Image 1: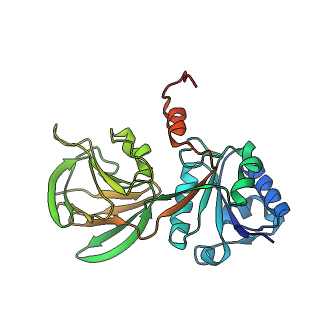
Image 2 (image 1 turned 60 degrees about the horizontal axis):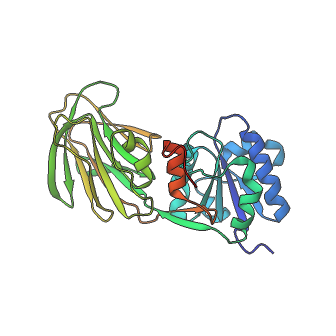
Image 3 (image 1 turned 30 degrees about the vertical axis):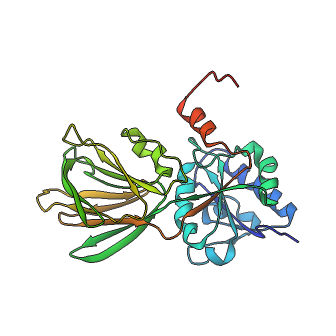
Length: 294
C-alpha cells in the first residue's frame, strides 16, 4: 500500500525537446511503484495512448496528492497557481532553462524521486501573492502569482504615473516605467534584473521594486507579507498601462484603475531532496564562485 502521495499528477510544458520522454519515464516509474497517475492536458496530449485521467482546474483538488512538474520554472509558476490553494505540494523536474524552482535533473528522476516519495524530503513554504484589479471601486478580477505582480507601461516607451499605498498609508507618487511587487521566490526573477535584492525564499516578506523611476533617490523597499499594497494608476495618464502576474497573465489597465495586492492565504508547498542547497543553486545559476574550493 502506498503510504505517501498515492495520487500523483504529472504537469508538463506544452513544447520542448525530450519532454515526452521525461513524461513517459516518470509515468513508468510511478506506475511500477503503485501510484495512481493523472495528467494535465499537455501531458495527455503528448501521450494519448496511455489514456490517463486528465485533471482540470475544477477536479485537481480531488484527484491529486502531489504535482510533479516537468519543464522549466515557467511551468512550475503556472502549475503553482492551480495547486497552491488546494495544499498540493509540487516537485520540479528541470526540462527547461533556468531551474531556480525546477531543480531536479531529468536523468536523476528515479534516484531523487524514490526517497521523496518514501517521505524523505525537505519542504519549503513559498509566499504567493493575490492581486485584485479594482475599477470604480468594483473588484473586477483576482489573480495569483508565485513570482511577482507587475504594473508597467506596456508596449509604449513612456513613463506612467501612479501612487503606492501600504496599509492605507501613502508612500510615494511615482513616475516610472512601472513597479514590480515581488515575493522572495520572485527575487531571482524579473526583480533581480531591475537591481532588486535576492531574498531568501522562505522569508515572509514582499519587495516593492520601481522600474526605471524618474528619480535618483528611489530604492526598493521590503515589507512584511501581512501588509496590504494598493497601486493607483493616476487619472493623468493618457495611455493604458499593463498588469501581469508571473509574466503569464496580462491585462490592460485604464487611468484610475487600482491594483490591490496581499499575500495569498495559502503558500506553495515546494518539495526538494534532503540535500537541497539554495546557495548552491545561486552559485550555479548566477555564476558565483566559478572555481569553488570545496
